[in-house]
Length: 384
Image (cartoon, rainbow, N blue to C red; front, side):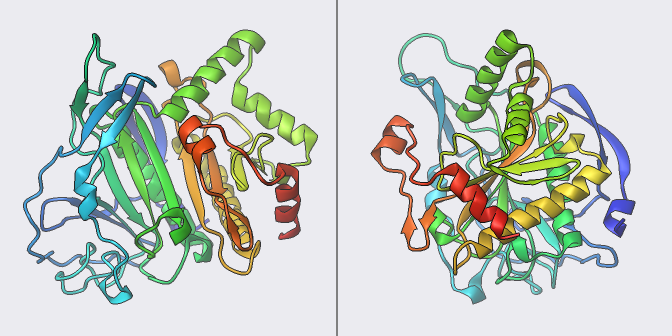
């Protein structure tokens, strides 16, 4: 068991007033950036970086610049965040804002080196606290403040690295940072859903190549989450069990799409995969979010997550562009049926071809897959 694992302590927090208990990683080093945003540094044993003053002449930060607008045709919220037009776009490596900034004059992380860093996004989609948006009554246009939280998580100070290239203890530290941020964001007024994710590769739309992900605290349940929970509630009424658990059992029994199955987790390509490469990671027992995993499960989850990403990098000659999405739920109320899992997806359908989300997918939300899920699963099994 690593030093990171040894430094756990018990804590209790609330998600919108609901109590959860978990083991939290040792508190990160905290600092403030020049415009008042939060910076947190998570460290491996024996490494405790000391931030220097952020001396950049940043403009005054204005919280709450985004807006939620309600689309009555779909019953969904749309985030309008015009500030993001100004975000950093494909800078040269020597101007990367995610690399260490020992002088405090250049990037977002004023320190000579770091293991894992988290900071509030300078160009946030959501910011500020308050009451979550309620579906407005009546006719006409309806809008609400874009409250919530958007953070950037840097997996390593190595500009040319990747999550797949992390050592197991370092990857585990990222998982612990996800757990820590999930906890704090769940406790913020107005946050209804916490979403940790990574976009990797310019084919996905990435504008900063430094290995990093993001963490969103939404003030509402996102459309896909709401749809899955609705399906799960209907499944409970009809069959008496949990939808996700029943699907997991069926995938395990079928076996044709299973990539790996251990005592604690199952990795598989879903029966109705929407993406050319799509892999799901499920714990074998029901937990609603990362905070429900015990010590052994966290360790095994980290190992399997690394294994999947490394298989992704071997499937073609070049590293696979992908999206990684951690589906987390509060475990109470309307989210009681939510089963924690990770979905990893790629738009690459062959070595030289991409899957574009054109009219059927983008306009109709009707996915058409060019690749058999069973074929993808077999290919990934062979890459062990």
